[in-house]
Length: 409
Ligand SMILES: Nc1nc2c(ncn2[C@@H]2O[C@H](COP(=O)(O)OP(=O)(O)OP(=O)(O)O)[C@@H](O)[C@H]2O)c(=O)[nH]1
Image (cartoon, rainbow, N blue to C red; front, side):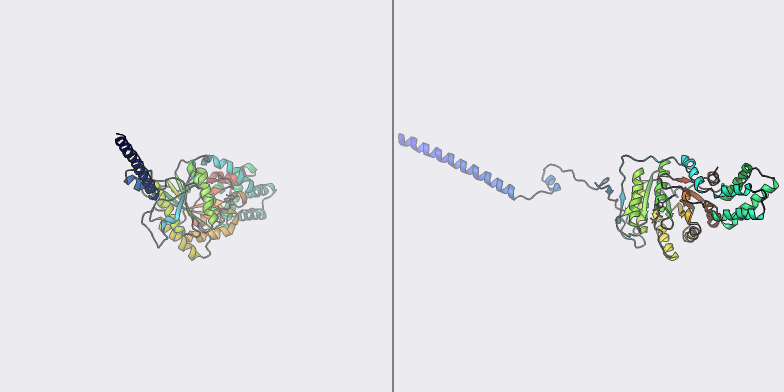
């Protein structure tokens, strides 16, 4: 009997040991397999019935350094331009935006600044009226003052003759009355009847208006583009900036900073010396795609020959117009450069079809008369004036306010 129970015990023990060996062996095998298995790509796991991963399909919004990848442009490579994806859009931070000053309130503030730097005409008039007898020499001095304030010889002579006639005919000796007459005659020269509004009407519905800003370097183009964006934002317009001044690397940075402060995007290239026409094209293409009201394109003016200037600006305009017509070409002139500025203005007017003048740095110049001269010569109105380095120191030009300013009224 004991032999029977001993056999049973041995068989039972053998079964337990065998089962344990099989279990431990299976576990080891599974661990080995897991260790050898490669990491799954996000999509593979899903395909194998694992958890569905969230895979971003495109870059949306700003990357950590504030630069978003521009959307893939249409296959519209023109004039042998470099591929358009060279440009990126600098998306502004949406917090702490500036609220630009309303355009209408700017002029009264800036008028005082004009009066303080442009009082040559007012002084010439009081000198004129201070003498006992106004003879030919006194009138000559008056005319010379007008010429030195950059009114131009023709307008200076016209103004002197008109004033002389009216003071004599009406027998005016009262300084206040004489100043009124000077105001009226000067206003005629500045011409309050000119249409000074920016053409921001797109050629077809849904297109943005396109403003091309040209001029010699240092005149204040980039600053003007930034300030103009603020004027338009204050008028509740949506704006996009194009940094086609690729000559000076810092210009794009400067422009993007202007844009960021008022929440406006800037399309720029990160490549030094990129093709300006390509950047301008990208900016307008993005403007069309985003449905903005106005695209403002900054350009470089550092060109030494007229042919070079003509080629470059011509190309920028031609390429932009593959997307949307340019509605306004603004020539930026520095009022302190006097006759040099006039020479530049003539060259630019020959090269591009200028539709408006922006006169900058009038705050630092006693030569407000250039408004009359440049309008006469180019047959194009002064539409905006820069009266300081402050962000809201650009104002739509107002003829009567301007005359009052330079006469110190
Ligand atoms: N006082 C004064 N300074 C101005 C005015 N407009 C521009 N400036 C200054 O002029 C300088 C040149 O301005 P920018 O805008 O860089 O000139 P730019 O034509 O773009 O020059 P580039 O980029 O070199 O072609 C800057 O220091 C501006 O602050 C103005 O109306 N009044």
